[in-house]
Length: 317
Length: 281
Image 1 (cartoon, chains in turn orange, red):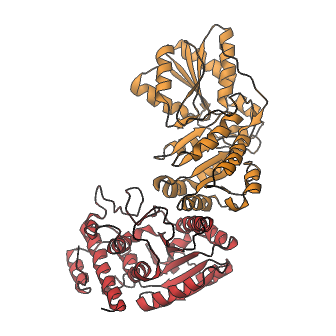
Image 2: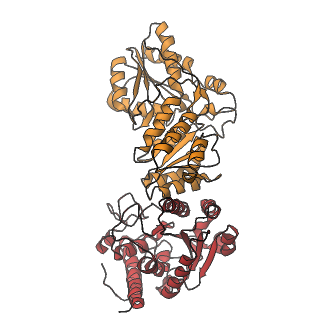
Image 3: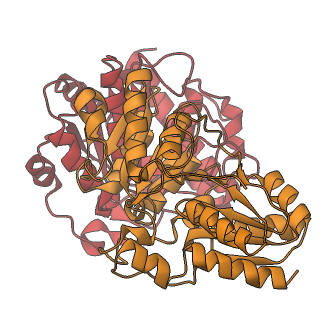
């Protein structure tokens, strides 16, 4: 099986910051807006290098989304930065009307998504944002897995015309995808080939899926691991091709099982090629305070939980 | 024909367009639309510098954003009669497969519309973005925005009002349609908003009043004064004192016609008060 190595733990939000820095140099139309979280979003570099293209809006996310929509008129490509909770639920109607329905070229960049925000607790740990955003017609939804991929995705979405939700996180996690990779929106990445079960993971759960595949390999189970960084549009073909071979699937995400990647995959399977599926996701619950590791363990979002889900789904084949 | 007469005739025709659009589909918002007929005509026919061809980016021209999207009948009528799309298309207002949706939208590609509005309170934010885009593009043209007064009850407005002053957005003129009415009654009964002039001033805006908000000459003179105040470090607020339902006696001074269409007899009475000038669609 393929070996993946961690080149050194980094946070995905720093990948976003690095991507934005790169865009600052290469694309004069890119502008950045932030709602009083410049440091948390790693936007300091862009701010320092391009003060005329950086807009501090204060603690006023609704206004930020409206301003971003307006800035597209005249050809700017606005990147908004705040936590995932304040990038979605707090400003859903502003995004729906002024950005999505109006077809504006705004990139909504959301850090601190999911449980791994940690100690701040449930007020800040949104587990519903993928569902909220994927339901908006025309919205592209991306959840990257590591530093390198987040940087590449940030750069790639500037070249795509249309609204995008880019979701990433706070903790330092394994950095294992290639440096300077080409990021293709909507194109799944096959990480591990196998015939017994398909594991489709997004965001922080991709590394956990690779760890799970190693454990399974030792048990004689060959898991196929697919990194679904784009939840919408979903790479239906990659999922179907794999499930036709393996006959069962586990989806893994740091999100509620309602409305997340798992449900999108279930729709693809049920309408094309029904197969047993297990969901590694939160079970319609809010989060709580704790370290990221403790929370991912308590809520069943790690390699061990994926192994357990694989055993369960294979028994249903 | 002199210019004043031309604009007056256009206002009367716009009133007819509003009434006929709303009547045909038995829905829509005639009250606020009628109250702003003079303002729209003055803005599009006199005040704004507009390019012949519509482009979304609107470079090197003034831009207009309607925040209170429910007064779409007056917006559509004035856009059509300013050449953005065929006047005959007003027939399709609120019908299936129309570009003239109940509330304005870019979704169907109607020329003249740059943002969807209808869910209230978002127009000033969008306008600020467009104003900052103009500054980045070294385009000295202005952004004009119209908001309802009741709409100012939405909190997002005050985020935007604070931001605009704090960031010296001085290429922006926001007009408030001060008709004192909203769906459930007068703004003073629904949620008193206090002294709006003092509120805007306290937030750092330059404010001027147009007391005769249904008088073309007063509007043109007031908006010219507003224009002269731009570029001086402050956003501009125009308090436009209008009469809801203006030009149709039984629709005036009441919120009853905020979102209600006239029946056949009411339409006939209303149209008899605005004789055809340019010709109906």
